[in-house]
Image: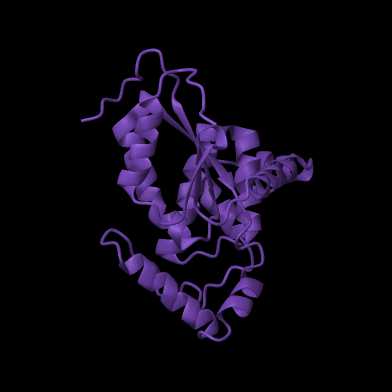
Length: 227
């Protein structure tokens, strides 16, 4: 059993996690991230970032699913993907009547919360948003719905909208999007480890994820990379 205490002489392993809030595979991955934190405690530090997958959600679905049933076909795909896992359920109206135009408003909102309230509240709200969308069928592409979810965490609109109005939240979001492109990330979710030297992408099982993190924990500090 892995202990939760940080291994002596080792800094925590940093996982840069990139995802889109509307991505079903990122929702599936959430439990694996929770388990990773539960098992490794302060030996691992997950930094959450966003990438642009559903920035134009309607255009994406029209272009990629027009021959496979359109929105209803994509809704069936999302339900079938979640159906592979006993612990997951998705709202039956997801992508049928609940059709967010874009994930960008939710991403921007979280960046504003991060600036106004800090990393912890932003991470907690992002999880609330994912759950609201996938389990409860809340359109998290709409600003009033996002404000309602923020109220559940006692986060006020004034601080959030101030970070948006100043342009800082936009800048933080664009930095994430641009970094994802520079890293050549293929899709959501993507995990960057060892300063970007290792990339895990897509439906990565927990054992694979934890094995990579634990290998980095065992690696001697300052060990040189081979050519």
